[in-house]
Image 1 (cartoon, rainbow, N blue to C red):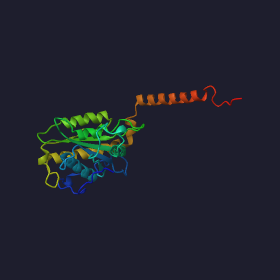
Image 2 (image 1 turned 30 degrees about the vertical axis):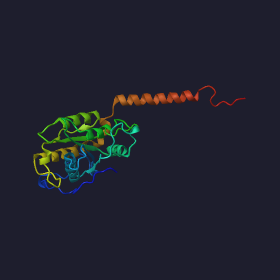
Image 3 (image 1 turned 135 degrees about the vertical axis):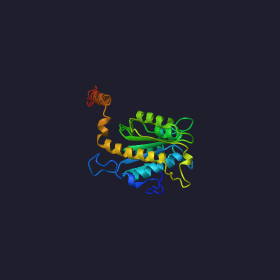
Length: 255
């Protein structure tokens, strides 16, 4: 699988454990709770990608809060439409991971005031519907961005728009890390700061919303229009079968 390994998964030097709830969703759903399954996507292929480093910090926090994180590695993901019928192993694995997930975290760098092409390509490879299955619908979503300059919210605003388009429940909280090159040490670990604390808040909130939505996700996205279309399709298929069955000459032997 194209999963990014998580270095030092349980080492959280910037976190003060006495202020952190290990199970932030406790009491929101019947116990025992299965670990929330969280897919994390980042938007840069640089060796020292700050969106990836921020996602790795978020993945460690997902683990700390009792979830199961998986980070998709987009390094060989083709551009949308580059491969016929999107028939590429990286595309298949991304879609499988989205189906596996109950919640997602997207983090993009801001480039020219927008999300990166790497980030957009991953989202574009997730169809609204795939063989009757919707790989993003009903899932909780958290959005984050990193910037090289002053703090901006252009990328998180775009990610929110895309999350709504993908029929996901985007949580209220978000993270925007300004001057990201100043926020990580040489080993790639995030330094203690208000920016780090906001990522803690975002992950904590995402875990809560994922657990809260889990038993109701299918009902919350059950739509009249889709039920009507499904009924029409079933009726049309039944009529087609009836037409075949009563077609002249079918099933009659010649004298």
